[in-house]
Amino acid sequence: MVSATFRFYEELNDFLAPERRGHEFACPCARAASTKHMIEALGVPHTEVELVLVNGESVGFDRLLHDGDRVAVYPKFESLDITPLLRVRAQPLRETRFIADAHLGGLAHLLRMTGFDTLYDNAFRDDEIEHIAAAQGRIVLTRDRGLLKRRTITHGCYVRTLRSAKQIRELFDRLDLARSARPFTLCLHCNAPLAAVEKALVAAVLPPGVRERYERFSTCDVCKRVFWEGTHWQRMRAMVDELLAQTA
Ligand SMILES: [Zn+2]
Image (cartoon, rainbow, N blue to C red; front, side, top):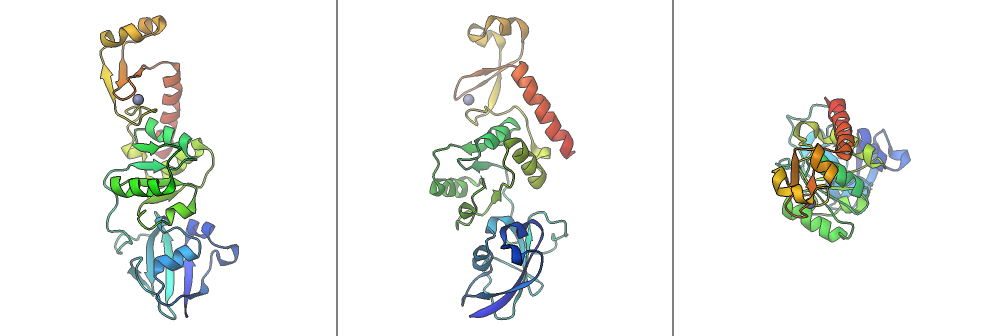
């Protein structure tokens, strides 16, 4: 057995046992334990971690721990400027795309509303989520820490809040999403792109009141639904505007 000391910063403390929060503590490590192994053994999913320093030097998740090592673990977007240091992941994902677990249907819906490609199906099993995230470069959204500890999940977000309106706010703040939001470009049902469509082409399927009042329409290639800027859309627009304004 070797012993190392650990200190976790900011919200990473939420994952620790109460007596380990906010200060350095010593912990025995198995022989040949890596930083990732120990960080997760202490309760912190590796996807929540942005930077690990061992004895003041930036290391990867595979660094083996030695007796007397001092390990400092930082969350993503900690205000400390860590840009000059090597981070635990080679690079960020090029495009922000998500896969949400079975409990986050409301959040998935709101992400689609703001234009973020988000896969969601309440029948997804954990191993399917892991497989799809790796194959398609998607960020896993979940409130299940065990899921984030899976080996091939490199980008994930543990969602802390419970209600979907709070969850979307949390993600916008944490991942700085406002800049890349493209509201009302995706079908909320299918996650497929919406395309503008000539009124004449859809007039036959519109309720008479809608046909009289609206001129602009869009449609989804997958479900063939037709959308217009009615009262439901206006409520969503107000919500999106608020989300984008608060972030600015
Ligand atoms: Zn659709």
